[in-house]
Length: 308
Image (cartoon, rainbow, N blue to C red; front, side, top):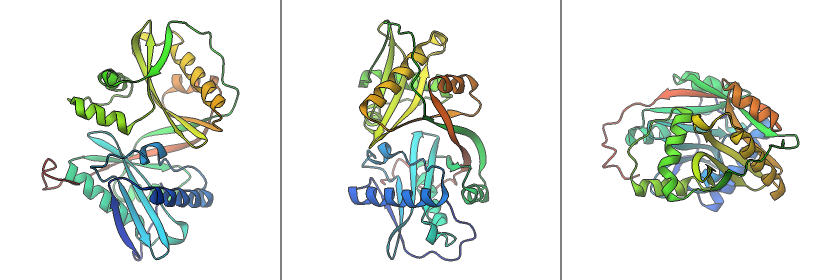
């Protein structure tokens, strides 16, 4: 996240969208390129998610200046009680209150939905972003290293009982349970139509089987020449058998064979065992992102009656 401090004024106008069209996606990508060129680091914008937004929900907030897009903030709703926020402001338009207005609009929408907490995702290189997060009461909940495949993907002794397949709707409840065990996520009562919606929002989800029984999950997000590996989890009782190493090695080699120039993943800074696995499979730490937890003010509007 790039964010200005000490705002003076707010030129332009706000747009909030239930999904981004091709022109908007192009403008967001151009803005991200300009910000990274100026600041270094990375903006965790999740292009695969941006391209498959639910049409009934507002998750993208844009600030349009006289010459086009100058600010963007995206909401990434991976769980019902907490979302992630990541955004940016064009370097020439900073310190004018743009990000503050985007943040106010996003948290206002979250209050209507009844979401109590947001995580501002900030690359540690972005001191202004960290300063903004602290200024709105944010405290670091956790931190993650981002890693990139830089060396030949390590080989693993193949176990013929381990297979990887595309997830189906029937796998939805297993996947949620597996992620809950791995990452401590709460499990809500999810209806079949909600599972179907989750499947559309998170394409590329895979199931790891052992002897034809599901034991883990992973998601691969492909965009242009980049592929990201997310939500990698194996049930505790099947860990320590080399399943994770075999799956990661296979995925990395397949993605390189597809022609993906960049293959990346993320790992908690406190997860030493996973970090060791990724390092030995050819990934290197390229940077670190802090997740600042910010409480969202409650709204008097009933979220069940709200239509975004």
